[in-house]
Length: 295
Length: 340
Image 1 (cartoon, rainbow over the protein chains, first blue to last red):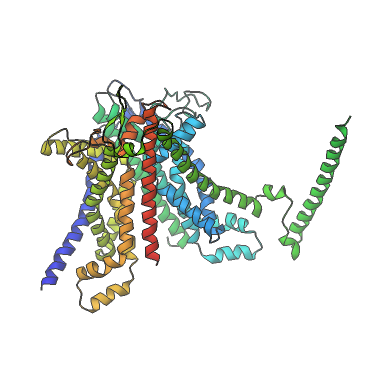
Image 2: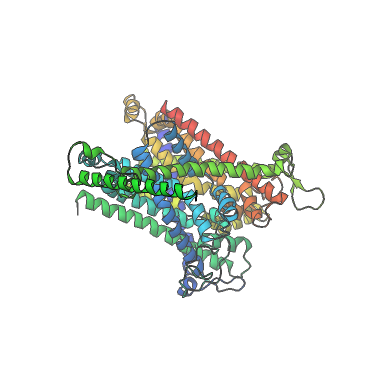
């Protein structure tokens, strides 16, 4: 009888743990959205932030977040996908391969602030990019690269061997096979992974603190010349992203409406991350349905 | 006059080269037109190899340089941070032992500045351990729920919950800590409300999903025959989980916890927002404190490159890097054990 009671109690505790987990998410999202949605308005999204007075918005920060994300992805995807292809297709078992694998592992588990410090040392100071979109994107590349590599490798190794053999049997070179047969086949899973990683990059802050900076010049959204210092497209200007803004407002902000701005920004950030998540899921499902032929 | 001779020689050579290239090109073209036996295997001319979009050499060059870049990244990070981190000992002549064990951090005092990093190291370790202590039971419980108990329905809810929790940016966790935990602490335990426990709570919640999802994977990896054997001798569900499944998944569960700890250890901004940033050694978990990451975050922007304080901060970064490497080694050790 005793063991049955223990069983009952223990299993209830386990269910309780799961309920706590789900409850945490519900509470988190509920709190952020409840507190934040009130302060989101068209004005909040489209006006510039004000360093001293209440009523500032997050237009520049929001733009910077997306722009840094875009530049990061432009750099990361080619390198990461190639690295993943190396590990999935070309790597022969041996010391070099296991060393590269360890390197990916190390990159994946470095704290983001360490990556930020490295970015500050190399890109900001040594290469002289200063606090800029480019420095931030390069630091985030270091941070994001292992994720893309893993996603690509997984995507490739999930493919059936017949596709590769078919290509090789036609007399194509290995690279030709990869490029025209394997990569398109692995594309859906890579894309899903890339979008998920985009959510992670979008919310990253510690690595950007010392690389993209804590300020933004007065952006002129009518000036699309990438060389102009106040152009939104300039990659050599400093760029405070949304997540850095949340931190900066809370720790060193002197505006009277810290709560409103922080909560509103957090809500926008979380909504964006949720959208990335939903997009990845939806896309994955849609492509899966298309490939498996079920409508 | 003398320079004319080599010039003509060069001209001839290049002419010859051009002819050679043309014939090679022709050969390659003919190989493409006539799919006859051996010519298929012939590689193209040296330039063509890299301009042809489907050539193997070109592909290999791209692939191998990307793979090489990852090695460069890791080596560069390790090398440059180590060099920069050692500056304070080599150039500013700080004593390593005093740096690691000193408890006084007064870098900007005019007379007798002190660089004792022990409070920060202690803070980091304390936050990490407390966070792991808070997160482990709930995370493992959730993992068991997902892998052992849940029917499809529970699974379908918990998986997205965990994925979304992983995706929430760390500053948002920090903000929640700042606007929920800190006032709560202030009301119940007095003081400013910014303390070690608040930091540990925030980080603990942050690592919950990471630990849970890896733990669930490792529990799913336990072969079913073990469970069936346990049920066959009359074990209850809980006895099976406790006596069979958990020991079988043992070292992978440890991997999950250590991974969570390494994430907790490296977290910067979320902790910084709630921990209070005191430079003294905390006496209880309700004292404000600081960690390696928080002091770097706070001070790095205000120092000039080359100053002693700046160098000391880089040394803190080096400690951070070294401990991250230790975590990586532990994880490797644990996963190797699993394979054997």
